[in-house]
Structures are given as structure tokens and as C-alpha cells.
Amino acid sequence: SQIRCHLLVHQPLVGWHVAATIRTELIRQRRPWRTVEQVGLATCEWVWWYNQQRLHEALDYQPPTEFEAALNGASAICESAAPALATT
Image: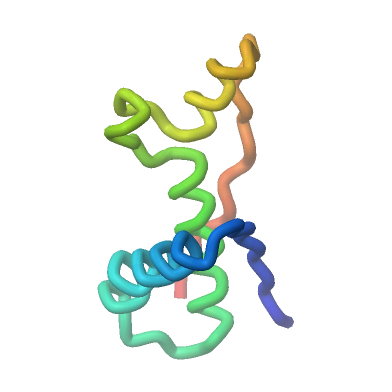
């Protein structure tokens, strides 16, 4: 089965920066990879963490989703289910 993970990027330089960050923080640190599917699943997990959980200095050390919810006046924070972690 093919794993797909969509990361919307509106500016080419931002896309390049995100790709470079994924390579540095994920691909190179967790190798060796046995299959392309492992890389795809790990990338989806990393993108989920990056968007949902990481503490961002420029956002007063809040995850991006919490900061966005506060900006929108949302009373409840988005509680997306985390992707299953790869065990192989």
C-alpha cells in the first residue's frame, strides 16, 4: 500500500525549507530505512508533530494549532488523533 501525506506549501522557499528540515530532523537521524513505506509513515508522523505539538518560540512556546485556535477565538483546541507510530 502506498502512504500519502499532504503538506500544503504556498511559497517555494518555504517548501524547500520544510523539506530540508525533514531531511535533517527525520530522515538522516533515523536511518537506515528498510522500505519507502517506513519513510512515508515517519514523514506523516513528523508533519503531524510539527503542526500539532511542537512548541514554537515565535508563538510564545505554544503549538501552532493552539496559537491558531486562540487567534480564531476558538474555545476548544483541535484534538486530532495522532498517527500510529511505526514499530518496524
